Image (cartoon, rainbow, N blue to C red; front, side, top):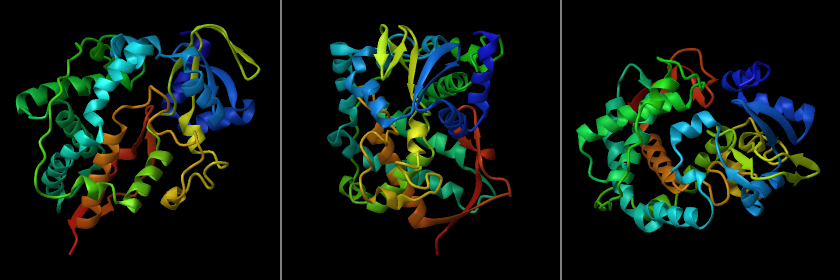
Length: 347
């Protein structure tokens, strides 16, 4: 990584991604170039351009990551493949996320929620960031393994936490850094298993009939997009809207910039679930990506959010602790201090 470009990467890891990209968009337009993690990049922030890169001409832009993260994820990851092999592999993965499979997961996800929410009651301080990470991990384990063996789960959790810290850190491969530690971990295989359906609580049909909760989740995913962008790489020199993108250059559709564009979402900084009472303009709402490489687990993610929000809002009240709130970036947005809250049952 050349020193002249290190500043751009440091800014991305420490600034609000919204302002980082919007400032550059104002100066250079919907398409501009920069360097991220040592890679020459073309940034695009229009829905039409994002569709070209991710869908209509996806064959010209292969899925990729900066070399540091590619080494960590490994070349066998589903994300890096294209064509018939990728299509076949993705169908196998998505079989676990079809409605017929997710129906059986409803009761098990609900059981997780019903087990851990009571532990929040009358606690002086709940770190919501930490608790939500635990919840997401437990749901992922169920979807992948079904029957859980605590000793195995704890071992996997340790490996995952180490990998997560390294993945979200600067790629400094020195002993003691999170990136260095995560590179030492071996990849773990995941076996699929069927999930049995329980007889109590929410049903699949219930989760399909929660319009207000669904809109709240849609608006949350828009305002607080986890992914600022996704990486693609030009497979050869590509003529793109009057620009020449050299072979090997990264092309990054900026999801966050599109989600916060006032042209598509008036008053974008305002949290307004009612904006999703009508479908958004095509290619302006991509919280899970777009095209054949979009997130295969998106329906599971939305389901676990629905179940959690339903039980939290209908059973409990809560209030924030402390005076300082807001978001910090590293590079993903997280609430400052984990957003500590106090929770009480509704009377």
